[in-house]
Amino acid sequence: MPPGVAFASGHFTAENIITKTTRSGDLVGVFHDEAAWRALPAGTTIYQVEMLPSPDGEGELFVGTTHLNPGRVGDEFYMTRGHFHQRREQGEVYFGLRGSGLLLLQSEQGEARFEQVSQGSVHIIPGNTAHRLINTGSEVLSALAVWPTIAGHDYASLAQGFALRVFLWEGEIQARGVQYG
Ligand SMILES: O=P(O)(O)OC[C@H]1O[C@](O)(CO)[C@@H](O)[C@@H]1O
Ligand SMILES: [Fe+2]
Image (cartoon, rainbow, N blue to C red):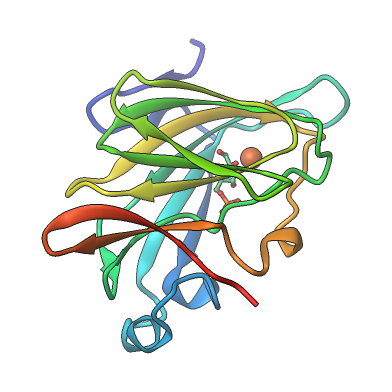
């Protein structure tokens, strides 16, 4: 039986799934409101990534699902750390499984834009583009991704953060540009 995905839960129906949990304490310097981040127990699960086992090497693909919990740090919605690929030219495809949120995309020149993620949405992340998921809904946001095993992750290039952040302000979802430096 090939692996499957249960649409209701977004979980793989397969054995040998590899799961990586990212907790609040792992996300140092990621959220805007440092005091609110410190107030959150460090063991709070922000997201989990489930991956199918994949062979390594040129031409191979990873398949993984990110399950991003609903919630906020201060006024800012829970989000993944986000990254460029180490191999900058390598792209990725996202597919929305459940919940609702935003995929934040940013070029190397710092131009940022959003795509709405919902059940069934398809997102083509071009090469040279940083990406981060943001859960703006009240349920778990799950999105399946496919990316080359050679892509790797570069987090350091985004140490200053993305150019846009998303907050709940006065009951509305608002994206704000962020001044760095
Ligand atoms: O690596 P981040 O930024 O925590 O994002 C979560 C996951 O998203 C992916 O890009 C898959 O979409 C994985 O490479 C990564 O583990
Ligand atoms: Fe990626």
